[in-house]
Image 1: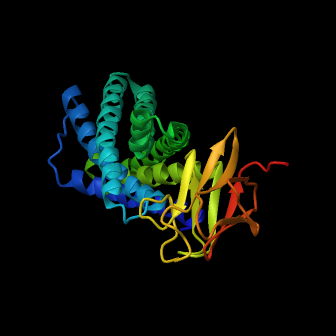
Image 2: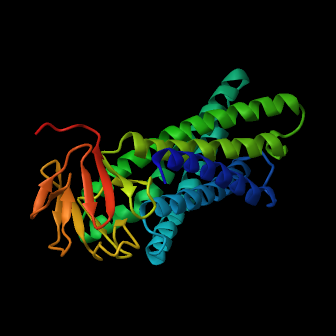
Image 3: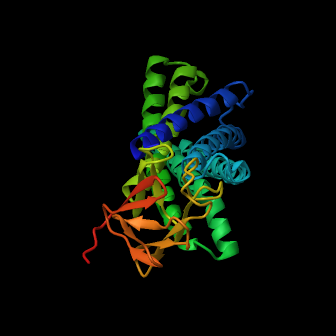
Length: 323
């Protein structure tokens, strides 16, 4: 899929995940008291369910974007790791937010209202930060264990947590505004028991986190490939690893399935010394950059056309390099 569609689907997946998280908590008998235990338990249940749902939705979409769905085992491992962190994200963030909310309620007048909203936003900011981390948790863990491509995983970590944190802040603000207007419209009723503002608030939090996590990855991208001809033309793929494989094998980072002229492992895009190179793996048909056959490695720059078999890929990077 294109980057524009990826960001769009991130926002949609986040919104639906937020709605799903709200649906789970709506059917549970949440405590309604205003004591410390009731407030923290209520917020922890809500936060945990929301964190689980958003982490599941966004990690599944991210895996589908970056990994071939033919690699089902890897997709499931990435999603499972993200869900585990997402549950912790919701639990920890909502515990902090709920505790601060209770302390704010001990104040009087307008101070209680202001600090309660600040506590609410702080809680969702923490949740957003950790959900951003959940999306790249599996890659960071693999990089630490194998000591391969950790640089790429670290760069993705920075992008995801930046997006998640900003999304958590914006989502918390939007949700807080909706809760405020909900309390005005339904004055005299407990706003946490009115479905519409609470549901819209959860949707807003999910949509903002999803949108910003996706947007941060695209805005801060270093290099990417666009498929001009071959398997699923028009799709765009981020290059975040130090060695990105091209081939027909299911484990290939850039899969060019159905092209008989492409070997199972045909070529690599390699990051060395801050520059990208195309490395041909001594294939019978060869690899070409701008119709020039690659012998060993060839440097890449923005706009270069990579041809392997009948497939054509356009290479791009954020900053143009002058040869």
